[in-house]
Image (tube, rainbow, N blue to C red; front, top):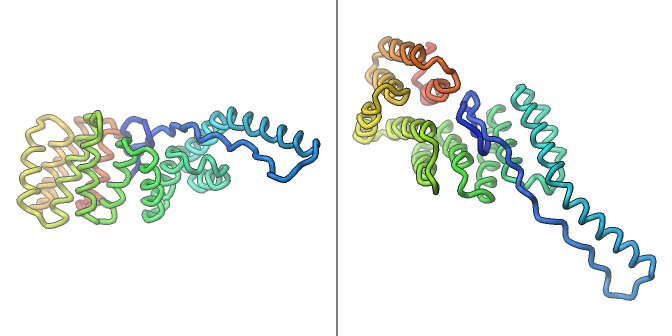
Length: 255
C-alpha cells in the first residue's frame, strides 16, 4: 500500500501527494500585563510584537522548505530520517495537513497503520475536500480488512466536490469490488465486477478479470492475465497500485 501525498499524481509505488503547506495562523501579538510597567518593559513588548510579525511572514516559506526536505528523504526511502525531521518541526507546522499526510505516509512505510490513520484523519479535518487524504484513510481500513469502513471511505472519495482523477476513480472502483468480496457480499462483488469489465482495454478491466480468476481458484489463469496486462501497460506507476491491491487482499500472484 502506498499513500497519496496531497496534490500529486497517482504513482502508488507511491501514490503520493505533494505537500502543499498552507499558511498557518499568524502568531498572536504580545499583550502587556494590566499592571503598570516600565518604559523598558513596553519597549521589550514592542520588540517582541515586531519579531512575531516577522516570524509569521517568513514561517510559511520555512515550513514549505522543511516539508520538501522531509519529502525528499521519504522518496529516498530514508523513512527514519524523514520522521526525525518531522518530529523536530515547530509546533505551528505540525497542524498543517501536508505535514500530517506526509507523517502518515511515513507511518505506513513502517506498517504502523494505527498511527498513520490518526494522522490522515487529522489531516482531513483541516483539508476536508482533498480526495488524496480521504483515499489514504480508506486505504488504512482496506489494508487492515475493516471492509465496511473501507467501503464507506472509498465511496466518500468518489463523492468529493469536483470529482477525482479518472485513474484514481478506477482504482477506487477496483478496491470497492474487492471490499465487497472481503465482507462476503457475492452479489455486489459480481455486480461491480461486471461493471468494471465493461471498461474495455483498461487496467481496471484486466485486473478485475484476474481477481475473478483468483476468486474462482484459477490462479494460473490469473497470473497469465496479470502478465498480459503488465505487458500492455508497462508503466509501473500505473500497474503497481492494482498489483499491490491484489496482494493486500490476499490474491498474491507471486506465490
